Amino acid sequence: MPGSGKSDDRRLGFKVSQEVVVVAISLALFVVFSATLNNFVSQGNIIAILKNVSILGTLAVGMGSVVVGRGIDLTMVAVMVVGIAFSIWISSWGIDFTLAVICGAVLVAAIGLFTGVMVAIAEVPPIFATLAIASSVYGSGRIVFASDVLYAPPDIAWLKFVGNGSVLGIPMSVVIFGAVAALMGLFLRKTRFGRLVYATGDNPNAARTTGLPT
Image (cartoon, rainbow, N blue to C red; front, top):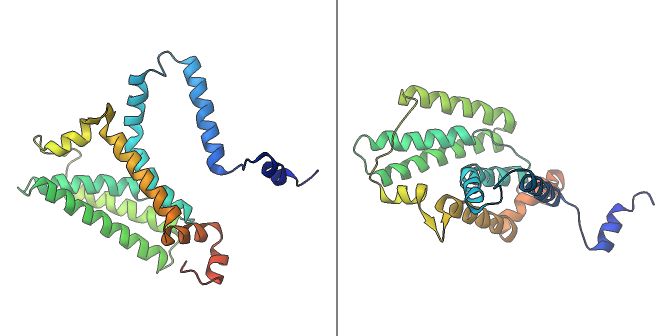
């Protein structure tokens, strides 16, 4: 019968959602690659793939939280690159590298706060605000640092561990990605603020009508 798709899903105890579709496509691709590419399912290759995507995956967690709230953020890559470069740049002045990384994190947070004010308070459409800010941040970084390549100090033990260390054979970057994804999932699903983000993303007009701070 027309329009009975949802009721059929309920009778089967299975709900089709965007998450389910994405997981299904990923599993299908994994099966195809496993069958057609030599050594694709080897332990070394799987770990290498996870390590290569862990940085982008960590960024995607942040982007995902923005998209859930019906927004978009095009500044992420530019802010990441400039934040790291800023930390390395000021560490070359003799500042302790750990302190330099904290300063870089403060810079990144300040840029994010400014972007949020432009979108939420000034009501500039997110795609225009974040695109303009990304270009400004990246261009300013190129001017200030005056170099395309900056090298971190070679003797920072914790930095080596984050970049090349492992826990139970799993690269540390993958562990960090998994931890960040798990924490963000708990934050969005189990906290009041997270539920507000979901409500705003699902239907901002309804959320505003019910008194939620959209």
